Length: 239
Image (cartoon, rainbow, N blue to C red; front, side):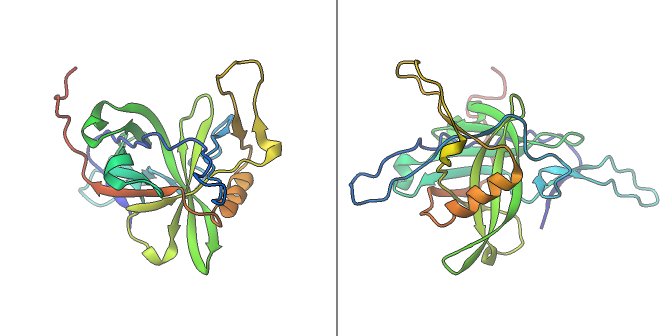
C-alpha cells in the first residue's frame, strides 16, 4: 500500500537522531558492534530507480477532474523512535520525524532530536528511502532498504531491513543494520589530533547492496519504529 498526498505541500520531517558511533562490546567475549559512516560522493539513487520514496505519481485524468499530481511513499510519515538493540527503550532512544516535502518536488525532510518534543526544531536534512534489493538470513527473507541522506556533497547511508513476512502494506518498522566497512573502502587522513576523518566510501549500488546483505548476517544495531503522527511544535510555528 502506498501513502499518497495529492493536495498540499506537507513538510515531512524524518530524523535519525544520532545513531551510535562504532563501539566495542562491553566484554572481550562479545562480538564488536560496527556503525561506520557510509558515504557516496554523488547520490547513488535517483528517481530512475522505481523504489525510491517518496516519489511523484502521475496525475489522474478523468472527465471533470483536475489533478495536480503529488507524492507517494511506501514508508509511513510521522514520528519514529530509534532504539539501539542493547539500550533501555525509554532512556536511550532517539527520535525521528518523517513528512513529505511537497506536491511537485518529492523528498523526505529529516529532523533529528533526542526527545520527541524537540523534533519540530531538530537537526535537519533531506533524503529518500530506497528499497535496494532482497536478502536472506536465519531462514528468513528480507527487503533490503537504505536511507539516502542528503544530496550535496553526495549522500550518507543508513542500512535497514524489513522482513518480507511483515507484508506489503505501508512500512512502519525497520531493523537497523550494522555497517562494517571493507578495508579497501576506508578513507581517512592522519595528522588531525583527536578529530576523526574516517568514513567508508561507497561508489555503486552493487557495493551498497553487497554490504547490506553481509550486515544482515550480523546482530541488528537496533530498531526504527513508527510511534504516531507528528506532534505539534510545543513552542509554536513561529521563531
